[in-house]
Length: 280
Image (cartoon, rainbow, N blue to C red):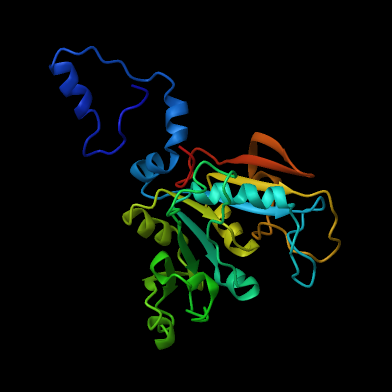
């Protein structure tokens, strides 16, 4: 056995039953590899929150959009197909109200036969779509709400849920506010209670920056395209300004892959050991 079950309700009980029955049991073989296959479950059991992966597409000069907000398309078709595979492996997709208002995305999995081992199977499991919307500003006709049963809107008590939004049947959860915005640790804790193991974040710089600043990002996927967007465009993470270089966020490069003319970088934030939210 590679690893014991991190669930405190059952941890080690199965091993003890086998040993009591006279079966020789060893554990720990390729434990790291086994945990990587179930990173979301281990994170939820150990730290009470899902595993969080942030996906972003940037230019060579580090922009995610032009100065006027136009961002379609920075990455190549090959990169966009790859994103669909990561979505298919996620329990939920998290985005912010700013992205919804600007792009009206669907945030669902769109795979064609031959692109993924899951493609062609019916029905394809769609991840939850979660919208961080502290003031309930999302239009009821937004495409991300086309299937309200697979969407959740997370807001705060600073405003009432509009009747037209309630009429869609989408689940609305009210959470505490923090510094005028949604309390993100509270959101992740609530999602863990709902047994959400793994979240892919596809959002703007503010939400992604807040998650990174609060040490709640476990993995970053960066699709970098060989183009320049010039002055004034947004970056992928908005936090700071920092007062010293000691406050920098360091990232460990785990993997690089060529996708068409783009490069995909998979990185792991390296937080200090005393951080509350950190990689296990």
